Image 1 (cartoon, rainbow, N blue to C red):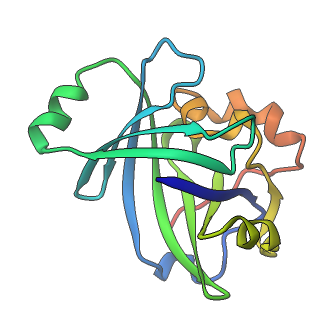
Image 2: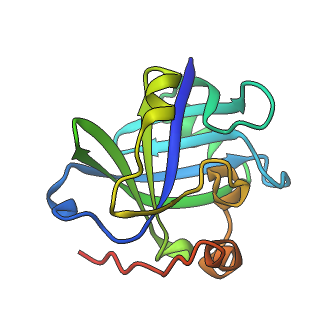
Length: 174
């Protein structure tokens, strides 16, 4: 499957976010030794899966090939025994202008980081999409903000990259 997506740093939490559907997520990226692993174990609410995401061509991170395998409880448990880089977040599904934004509020070591993803059906739709006003900057092409690169890092580790965009830590305690 080809995924077309744009990612933004949040300027602030959108109004009404706390009332939106949400779920806790844990991502474990493998192998732990990789600088930027692309193989991900995910616990998404009750769903368990393994996904590999790779750039389709060149360096355009907005167009990725995504291969996902559903896992049983036993398979997931066995695979989580492998050393990997972990990252936790709460994902909110926020409706705006007829689209669903995936608003990821990071927890633990990355607390204060909020990313917003939008997925698209066509490249034309993706290219024409205007950045929502609650977003600060598009970071789709920024490697330091990719999931596999974020995993195992702290907010302080990525603060220099965030400061290039004037990002300020967001307190998302509900």
